[in-house]
Length: 435
Image (cartoon, rainbow, N blue to C red):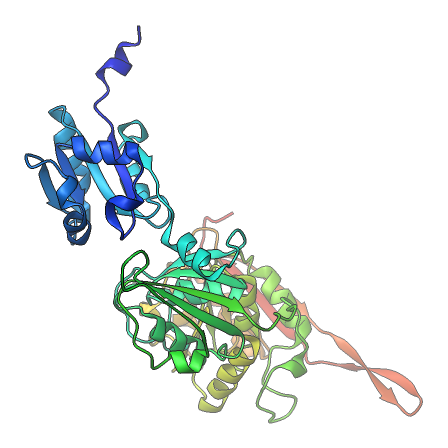
């Protein structure tokens, strides 16, 4: 006989419930609810099922008290009492089940799911959902979306999903509403690329499905608090070149040959940065933004922080970012190292221009780099090269130097010649002790 199994506490049942209450529950789930000695749920759900909760059962409202729920369950199980947690729809789809599983042993809970509200919204509109990206904006109120916001914004993850998927179902919140999502799409130049529908108060008498509206109209429409947003592309996404874009594809200042890290140097610099899909990147002295924006495309799940002191260059970066459809990129108009303290620690840093603060910048960056991270610097003058190398030596950094000089073919009469680009020195460094 398995004595350990005999000593296991009564499982906590997590029951999925829809807004038509008991009508949405199976016999097994209803029996667990009626026999429960502890019932935990949001105030609205507790009220909805009040008639089916035993009069002697203890009720706990989890609204604003999510962190206390695991302890409530442990306390009830320790005294051999039956516990039920009420959740909306499928508790394993952006629900409470994952939270409880991470804090209680899996053997201590049992999930009895219902239809997800996302699935139900798709059913109302007859939209297949097997290839949909499910997303949620159940986060703090961060206000309307502002282009260039960092990952702390409540809509950041949704916008990343929208950039990468053609069909989405979105759980909203009282703050992050359908009209706010629509305004974000307009701000990012995506309003003409998507169609939108909103399913309100599903399984309630006031249920309403709003479809056939333009994104721009939706920016000013009020919606009921309980809703699901469906988005699907009306225009096909164009295949994107992720690496090695032509110099001419970037807006740039043209004092002579254009203030841009040239294609060949950019490619080598990006390669030396050792980027991953989730890398956090700093782009210091962004210029036209070419390095940082290509890094943002490569680091789909990461983020690029860029700083540029020239106002005209900043305007070019913003123009390039919009044209390339990039959202995981923040630009600051300023002179490094001002403002860098607020940025997340980087996996890779690119310096294309320093504004004369090179020693201070290198020192700061080598302190902030994550383990295994790389600092990559481009120089065209001997003086800055000398400062960079001597600073790296003084800090005990691991460093190496590459001189890169490219020549491009140019027509001359009916023939072609090779025209040399200016030589560029690429200095790469890691903190001392990094292999």
